[in-house]
Amino acid sequence: MLATSRASSLLEVSDVLVGMYIDNWERISRFWESKEEISKALQQLCQISGPRWQKWMGDYDAMRTQFQENRKLTPPPTTGKINANGEAVLEISSDLKQAFRAADKIAPYSDRLETSLIPIVSSECLLLSIAQDANSAIGRRLLATGLDVSSLEQSVRYPKHAPI
Image (tube, rainbow, N blue to C red):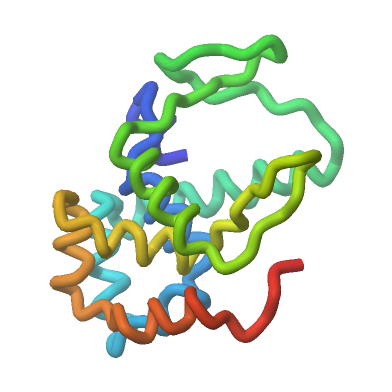
């Protein structure tokens, strides 16, 4: 939603962080001592304000409700490509591709698709790969927020539960 609200044709690392912030807050917030401070830091890092965040949550909830009622949604305006179904397709930025490649390497589980193994990348895997990227400004800023990298890495490498 953030990328389309910016009329961007690229999905960026900050867009994925916003998604994790909105959808997986309970899972990722445990790696910081102060949930209030990291919430503010993520809002600043990802350039979202309280009212904008609340609007996106309202839009997301409305979208989920419409999908549950099996209604066809009109795709949001975008400068990106349109697929055969008329839906907006955003390209993935090179930084985000790099983060996913790094997350693929540390993912403890994978799924088999025909003869290939596909890594199962959790929010924790992706958060760790973003934070460990020394070339990434967002990664450095995440580390500066007090992210408990050792606890995060422990959670990634030795998860309590296998994925469903």
